[in-house]
Image (tube, rainbow, N blue to C red):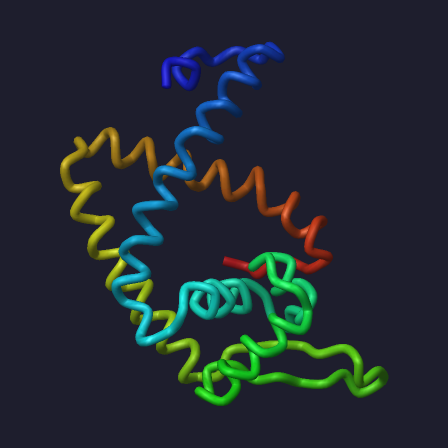
Amino acid sequence: MQSLLRATNSPAAHLDCASDLVDTVPLVMRVIRHHLRRHRSGLTVPQFRSLWFISTAAGHSLSAVAEFIGLSLPAMSRLIDGLVEKKLVHRKTCDTDRRHVRLSLTPSGQATLGEARELARAHIAESLARMTDRQRSTVGAAMQILRTAFTPELTTADGIEPEAD
């Protein structure tokens, strides 16, 4: 983590910072996933991850969700069928091309996802409570910087417009 403290604009510093992110983000995500799994309301992990991804922008395609989850289109279609049956996801066929499907969360899907997120957030807050106020402030500022830096990259890769915060 020392590289984050060395604020220079050199290519080596960029690589050091990138290494810190690549090494640290999976650790943080592992803890978050652990807490989310504990509160996923009877959903499989891929179903829960699909709900989260669908919630990130209006009208994600089945292909975009399949790519994010890492499933084939037929397998993703079956997974979405299950979420539709549970009334967590709404599937809308494109008016001009029936092969295109847009996905959105139902109010029940939003509530299910929201409940799991709130419970996970409470557990994460317990870990953050062990930090000093200054450390928490630094983490919060870093999250805002990362969101700003990576949102355009994801938007371009996914072909979607970012949601306003």
